Image (cartoon, rainbow, N blue to C red; front, side):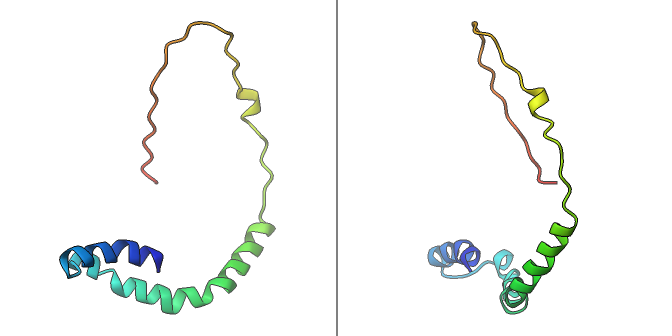
Length: 86
């Protein structure tokens, strides 16, 4: 519900209406609230059991990659990360 409020309330408060772009998501929120949310506890239980049964311990690969730079004059470098979420 918080996502719906955060998405819809400011638009409706400002314009007095809901755009068709946002309006098309209303049925999706309805299905989520009425069909998915009531099943949340059983879904979490089932998925937790699956994850626990298939848990794989992975070695810590980062400790071997640790770098310690000796004291000295270094030039700062700006680094950016672009994550498309894919």
